[in-house]
Amino acid sequence: MRLVIFTDLDGTLLDHDTYSHAPAAQALAALKAAGVPLVLASSKTGAEMAPLHAELGLGEAPMIVENGAGVLEPGADGAGDAAYRKIRAALDAVPSDLRAHYRGFGDMTDAEVSDVTGLPPEGAALARQRCHSEPGVWSGDDAALARFLDTLDGQGVSARHGGRFLTLSLGRTKADAMREVADRLGADTTIALGDAPNDVEMLEQATHGVIVRNDHGTPLPRLAGEENDRIRRTAEIGPSGWNAAVLALLQDLGATTG
Ligand SMILES: [Mg+2]
Image (cartoon, rainbow, N blue to C red):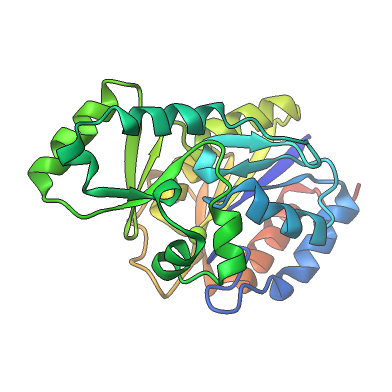
């Protein structure tokens, strides 16, 4: 069996409040001992994720960045930003009465991104180093939004709502990136863990999906895979739930030794 694990970060591997992964230490060590690659899959940028990848000692495992819009190899220099430049060019071509209602991270200063995200200023600077997607805030009405999205769609740019942000991309999800990485790593069995709507495609596509309990958001609706336990839910929140679920799955799959 060639097992690869894909995980969301905030509210999943990282605690919602403290951003700590300490409660998952036992399962993280078990993965390392068994030689199972751990692929981080987040809405964060590569610049934001690289320090965590290094801290966790994830070696050669690629990272799924910007909600699946990109895949980053660790240590890759100068990640290509062609997709981001295409999105910004599409924004430049939107009629100005519509464009005026959208303020993307590329239109904001680090301080503004810090304000809208709650990130510290140095974190905001990393969040602005985008290569594949553009989050932003929409301030117009629904009718204008429909015209805005229609105009972008005509240029191959799609949009997804998440929290207070409207994120523009070329349409790839975490599940698309997961399929690409799983193929590249020769995986025949996958586990995906996540806590939010932007994780659902990944959870449904994995051999085994784990919905990690997060008491800060609306619980995910019941997914089809829960009928036959292909998708399970953790009893505990965040990294504590992550730890228990990964240890249990490793045992079930007989993957506890290298
Ligand atoms: Mg999350």
